Length: 263
Length: 307
Image 1 (cartoon, rainbow over the protein chains, first blue to last red):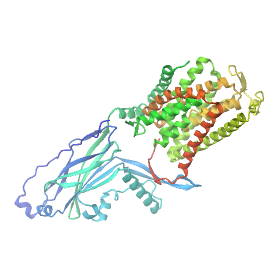
Image 2 (image 1 turned 180 degrees about the horizontal axis):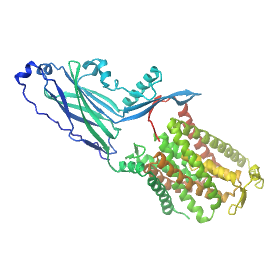
Image 3 (image 1 turned 180 degrees about the vertical axis):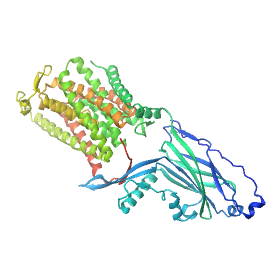
Image 4 (image 1 turned 90 degrees about the vertical axis):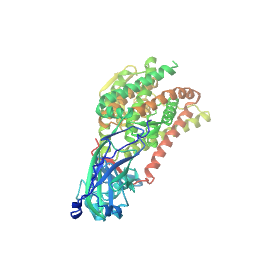
């Protein structure tokens, strides 16, 4: 089994230029940039999770605010959105049966967050709700919106809890570090069961608790290797795959008799 | 040594699977059963998703029944005509089973249904076998000759219409129960991943009065094709057949079966049946306990729009 591949993501350093005196009167607006060294990552079947490093830079930061550490960055790696059903087991005649369920549209399969500080220290909770930022604030749209708010809330909480428990939703407080006034490095976790597909890396810049700017980049995660080829054949050529499975079984049965025959 | 199963999408230990295949193969060689009814629950206990355990179990059954049917074909103890009619029923039953399987999966009740069916079937078969074998053991210990049932007697099944002659089995019966039996086995094959030999053999002997010498060969013949059909349909509609998993089980199974058959020759019939009955009951109890025990997580997630 191939071990986890090392990921490298290089900085996309934007050209930084010194502040001219003119900007001192009208403060330039800060912005944020992130860069990935590659737009696709291949993981093998034995993948046991890894850290993905994303570099980024602040543009036009105010040196005073930067020195006071009042810039905060939140970096998110968001997996492809998929519909999901959450089911709850209840006891019926002593047997645990899936009874109630709630379907959600377009829930990111994975959601890894890295922040400079704990989210609650960066901005007001309402801000996160508005931005739909953070595993606990991510808006999950129920398919049937006529269900009672209490039910929807219960199942949304369960969905978040399950995703967190399986490592698909994670938060890395302190995972974003400023390397200089402009340059930062974010470390987000890739779970062993990270989904394949197009992931979106997003960086949010906060200044003294206020949201300033967002920047994003796309990352394709693919699986490679022998096992993945089998998976692809099983889905793309399912009939031929079935014929192969049956033939393999017959061949094994026949060979087994040949090798161990007694009659 | 770990191996990643491409369809089940989990890492497992190769030796555990080979040993599991060998153990079940040993038992199936010893008792003359396919072993599908043991493989599927064992895979579920080993955290393989039930949907994949069932489809892969059906695949694994082909290997052992093909190997067995070849021997019976050589000895001429195989009724092709009877097997063919059973198979026709089996295809219908299996198709219905696949449909129900996909429906239950969509409703989120598949795992429960598989467990319930296993508990009910294994519990009943295991219980009946245990009672029968204990009685036989007692009778032989007290020295009384075993009472043979009169074989010439006909029951209601033999009064049904559409009679057909099965020369190799020296049988003249209605096709209705034969088709029905085939369909029932096909249904179980696609939902439980079993070959169904443990139901087919007694049904052929006691209900249809098929001579014992052709029963096993004919049953195996039908099981090959029903499981092959089930495997194909599961592969195309549900994509739940894991060839790597199936191959490891088969490889262990064919080897284990040979030693099991040798060991089986040294034990007496009633003792063998009592052992098998206890094993079947143990699996049923284990599955039943899981149904009643409080699960660690009440909530579960599944992809919507499955199938």
